[in-house]
Image (cartoon, rainbow, N blue to C red):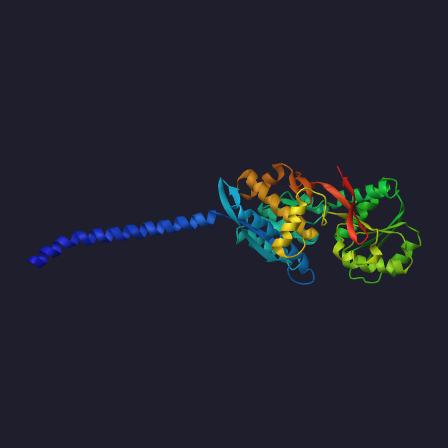
Length: 394
């Protein structure tokens, strides 16, 4: 009887104990879900598309390094403000391989699989246009630090920190007209390079409109390494200035061959020139080129950026890193302006926020996603880059 009584008394206790365990499990489960949900909403995801393999890997490395540097600064302050809650910025870097086709696949993966709210990157115009097309369909903002093709303007969700080719061409034409006495200019451009064709054509149009003379307008095919045929035609017209809207590797070959054939005039370049390489080449003494940024640029906050970047990364910042830093920091400023992680709202924030004071200058994204900003004209003088002029194109 005692045993039966004990069993009868213990049954309610077992039921209570079972109920208590079930309650604890449910609370733990719900708590875990809440924790996971909190973790999910406390992160802000940013995709980074950059070529980090092949011949152009260095440009992609600059982009990734600069975005990480900017992200570390923002995360050290708690992250970005979304609905009054600080969100840690998480980066999702991918390699475009320098290919528009690969860039398209990577952009889709970042948006559909990784659920990023925005994408930064695209150093070349062809890759940037491929990413822009995807982001337009998905309504996700895309910011390129340096692609300058005018075609990017057609995409509502695409932004850039660098000025457009039309702005750059107008600035170069103004500089030559006003500061170089409207001397005769010859142009050598790449017939198969959209950037080179566009910039050369726009410069010719603007310079002739200003009353300047284009003495020769020659092109070369992709892959060319010898330019004697085109340069002989150019030199025969006796131009005082030779404009190369081409990349640094080709420009160095073209300049050396032009000097060898007897050209003694001024070389003129675009934002595709890399002064780090050209400073070591005597052929470019007293040359001029459009610029976005260079070390020592007299802009508020630039000296602090340069010093801190070197301290954190162990190397001097490059122009592409400065542009990419401004792309990332202007994005974070837009998020803090609208307090949202919604891509469409971020797009509106980038357009509507106050002008952003960056290390490459103060700029304001207009309705086309292009920056209203100054164009710097740099000169290679006495072994260093100096600011020769600042031109604002309306």
